[in-house]
Length: 480
Ligand code: NAD
Ligand code: UGA
Image 1 (cartoon, helix red, strand yellow):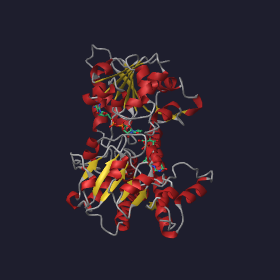
Image 2 (tube, protein in one colour):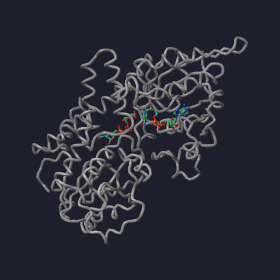
Image 3 (spheres, rainbow, N blue to C red):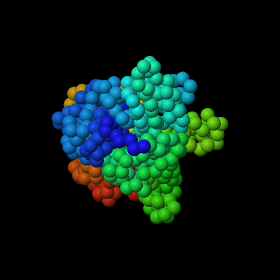
Image 4 (cartoon, rainbow, N blue to C red):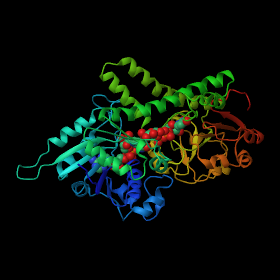
């Protein structure tokens, strides 16, 4: 039986729900898409006339929103109403790591997924296809199904029926629109062929059929966790080698290139950096670790846990290196941090390496001036747990920063941020940092002045030519 989808409701207007539904709306003008969220402020921002105010920054998203919003795409807090008129409901809520109770620190907290399932159970009408878009532990579909099936109305009302599908999302932030428009694959797991076809038919509007994979529901759930674990594992692998390069005189860029040309390894995801961040890699690996231990597979759990441990070690390794190079102490010194987002082209800071590194530097008594083109001061306040200094600082009046130990200030200008600094640390690979005038920066900094390029994006020769000392991730040559 062909199921035609006319109304979609997506619960969760976040980094996944927002872009994913915008692209579906753009590609399928005949389907009405209602994105709902309990966070009214977030919804207000999704409805902003000024696209600069959209709650997430994602290149290309503003154009799609301007084409679809108010036509076949809406953002609202009308959760019950939009659930009740939907043929298909995407659950796209957050699934963070549990902070307390059984599995704390490893297992995913499914309370919001369960809350959604209960709302769907209550307000859905007729037949509804429920799609897991959030990343979920294997077997979550069973929980959702149980909740849905326990929700039948009184005997004189029309019976509700449900199908549950798993359709994990593989987009990466910063390239979400491209990833959604040209996905490597779309994965759909489920038991009902009709429901699978209904969802496939939506994707077929723009995704070639051979890229739409059908699997059983558990393979689909597990594939998402596995994909993230494999990607993160590559980063921990190359970051571990960066440390070895620095000790041996090798260069991690050369090693990456050499191994990446082996077609069995491939060149992507081999950039050594300050350690992976983002809301999902750590959470999803820890989830895999939890599942493995649950099934008594301790060696499997230990293997994957190593990827996260290496990442944490690597972030603190960078903080220590900065302190060591600045004569073993940074108290009373000013350090300029360029980039706070966990990667370029996003305003997201969740699990950003910058958080651990800045906290380490503040603990050591440094004064930080932090710049990021898209992350707000308020977000950094939250992440560091310390408020930015409120008043503008006139650096020309200051000789040392002993009165500023453990404090930080948000700077809108890169050049102001570097003023009187002992070091500049590049933590996010924003394009604008590759265009910095190092001559100007060198004149503003205190000597000896260090540049720590944790993303390997700066022109080495230009830095050195401007009387600056350079440390680059994974660079074992003694060039500075
Ligand atoms: P997010 O925190 O940005 O957004 C989740 C939204 O869900 C929030 O706005 C929250 O208010 C809303 N919400 C929670 N419970 C709700 C409820 N009961 N009713 C209505 N709204 C509710 O999260 P995200 O980054 O979009 O991630 C969502 C899921 O997608 C996670 O499982 C994540 O692992 C997965 N994922 C994320 C990415 C990514 O790049 N961020 C990529 C692929 C998959
Ligand atoms: C990642 C995956 O790439 C997506 O496929 C997945 O859907 C998503 O997680 C998710 O489930 O949330 P994302 O975290 O948005 O996407 O961004 P990535 O490009 O994967 O980068 C993650 C982190 O690894 C960033 O901190 C990035 O700077 C770092 N990274 C990435 C490196 O240090 N080196 C690399 O070579 C690549």
